[in-house]
Each structure stands twice: as C-alpha cells, then as structure tokens.
Image 1 (tube, rainbow, N blue to C red):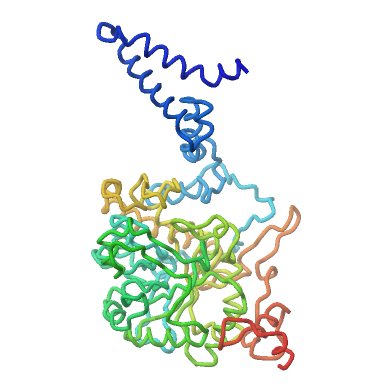
Image 2 (cartoon, helix red, strand yellow; image 1 turned 90 degrees about the horizontal axis):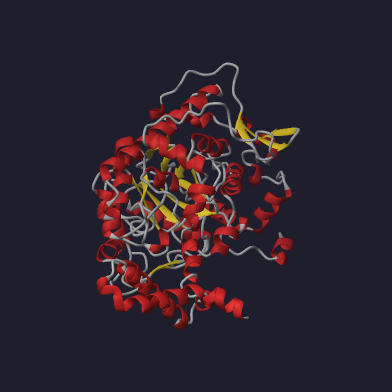
Length: 542
C-alpha cells in the first residue's frame, strides 16, 4: 500500500516540498523560475485532490492531467503521425491530399503505381476503351434542370457545392465558396440556414434550401410564409429551390442552435428572435402526406416564378418514396429534381447512433430512386442529384454511372478552403476558420485566396473527369452507364454494375409484371394519401 501511495502522490509531494523549501531563498536565488513552476504545479495538484469530477486526477494529482492532455490531442497525433494514406477517418490522407493539390493547382500525379490492392474485394474501377474518344471541354459538362412544368430551367454543372449553412460555416467560408462558384459557373447550395448577406456578395448561383424551420421565409411561429418566400425567391441569384426532407448524416433528426450561439447576423438571416433556441423540427409543417408534398412543390414553383423546385432526402422506408411517386401520378405534379443524400454524408454534429446506423447509403438510395422513376416513365422528366463523400473525378463518374445526372460535394469544398478534418465543427473552435463564428478564428481564412482554390478544385476535378471519360471512349458524363463501372467481388471474380443490380425497364411499375419481389412489394405498400404503408388487409383486398 505504501508503494502504491508513493507512486501516486510522489510527484505532487516533491513539488510541494521543493516549493516550501525554496520559498525563503527565492529573492536571492537564480532558481526562482523553478520555484514558480513547482508552486503552480502544487496548486494544480491541490485542485486535483479537491475536485470531484475526475477520479484519475484525484488518485494521481498533477500527473493525471497528462492523460486528458493526450486524449485531447489524440486525433491530431493519429492524423499526422499514425494514420496511413488509405485510412478513411472519414476521409483518407490520400483523398485530402488530392483535393489540396487540385485546389492549389499543384500536380496530383503519382509515380510508381497505385497503392491500392486491386485484388481486394470491393475494389472498383471504370473500364476503358481500345479507341479512346477526343478530350472534351469540361465547361460543357452541364445538365439542364427543369421539367415540363418549369418555365425557368437552370443549366447546372455536374459538380456543385452541397448544402452548408451560414451559422455552421463562417461568413468568410461562405464568401469564399460563393466567389469560387461564381468564377467557375457552378452552383452553391445555401443549406437550410437561408440566404445570408455573404451568399450575395459575389453573385454566385444559389440553390436555396428550405428545411423544416423555413428559415428566411417563416412566420413568427415558425410556419411557412408564402410572401417572404416569394420576395427571396425572386432574386436572379436564386436559380433553384430545394426542399430538405432529410439529411444523410442524421435522417429523421431535427436540429437546435442554442440561444447563446444565435448571433444578431444569424437571427437576421434566418428570421428568428434573439435570446431563444433556433429550432429545426424533425417534421415539416407545410405538408404531411405525399400529395401535400406535391402541392407544396407546385406552390413554390408558382411563387418563384417558375424556377426549378425539387427535394432532397436520404432514403428511409422505401414505401415512403414510392408513395411520393404515386402522388406524382395522382396529382400530375412533378418535382424538377430530386437530390439523394447518403448516410455517409457529413454534418456539424449528430448523435453517433444516427451517423453510424441510420439511413440508407447514397448508392443504394440513388439506385432505388432512379429505378422507381424509370419504372413510372418519369425519369426523363426529373433530374437526379447525388451527395455523400464525393471528392474525386472517379467519385463523380461512379454515381453518374448508376443513375445520377449531377453530384454535390460539401466536405470536398471544405477541404478546398482549408479544412484539415480536425472534427471540431461543433465546438466553435475550428482551427482554420471554416466552421466557426469566432471573428478572430475566421479572420485566418483569406477569402480571395480560398475562392481561387474553390475555383481551381472544381476546374481541375472536371478536367480529370474529362480525361477519364475520354479513356472510356465517351465525350460527356451523361453517357456513363452501369456497364462502365466494375467491382471486384473476390480474388477471382469481377462484375459490371449492370450485372450486380436490378434495373427496372421503362414503365415496368405501371404494368402487372415487376422484376424483383422487393420493388413489387414496396409498390404495393405505398400510397399517395399517406406516408404510412398499406395494411395487409388492404393489400389482400387489392
């Protein structure tokens, strides 16, 4: 027992003893800095003994603090000293380096061959052609968004900035992203935090996202305000309207910005009062059934003067999306676009159980939505976007090959403006000024420099996509198909994505013979009048 006590309290006792012994001589000694240091450590040790929150510090005064110091800097130690190039946490060093290189206009070429084990199951690649196509101009990699009910279609790049709100990101981050988007002629999604003054400074194209809080177009009690919406949507800078139904990283989960974080700027931008928590409910109040969602889309399209209106969702219960599809048929109202978000997407903060175990991954969700629209003969009238962990030209090509028309990236563009993946977005202590409202911290983010990087990252990524397409014998991203994407299944077998998945034929859901029991069953369960599935008794009657 005595040896245990000695090991636990020895350093604290030595600090106290040295401080007391040297204190009478401190004025005439050159060792006063040591006395000062041991005195401060002694006070720390005394505090450790008296505090009741941390057992380690009570048992190991002074020395116990080393444990918490190491724990605090563990992510940085792992990221810079221990992490391999291919270890994704959530993005690998190789992925981040690729973005940094393209944003800084440095070469992203690598010598000596790939570091990836191409014989590992899950490895994916795009097959190339013996007769490569001429290299296309990436400026032409665009898609027209706006169905037959839209009077102001938008020509969008196939690669755009995904939803990130002012409040989650700093003012300087928003400025840099929008200026880069303006220079590169691509779109910047506002996120659900509404259109801030910083979105407007440089005039880049905006996709205005409406979440359940209706920020920027809400009544005092938090409901949708048509007049305020029409005023905002009339801006020429607003090119599309996106209703956020759910977010990949925390589907079905509302949000709260605590009142102490609601600054005057955020309150003014979102249209919320100061001194109160800013709530994003988990449910929309403007609609509660698939048919009401379609009617809301038609209302927004009319109020915006005919601009493209669509919605974003992370796929959940399959019958709910098929219920939306049935509502399209029942009402004749079509969204101009649908963005499929994946559970691999990011967020400023979410419960671990949600980020790890809620929601459908992006590819499965995208395939299901694509197939449903094909099976209803609606795919040519509705454009599909995809978002979720997209940073490279191959990432873009792989989602376009399985059904998307364009894709969005959030964290990729965060890397472009300096994010180092410190994973401190929710603390207001972002070390690079990207995800903070601290004026001194965001001052470190120099807008003109980072805007240039946003522009360069977009341009160089699409240039790499053009080279991949040419190698595959293609001239435009719209030509990519599932047959071009290949996955290794085992050490001795690879399969085309066209072999891996069920792809419905045009109009198949409208007939009696549906390929695959899953699609047939979900179509039976879905109903346009409710997000609830039909009961077994109702199915038997049909």
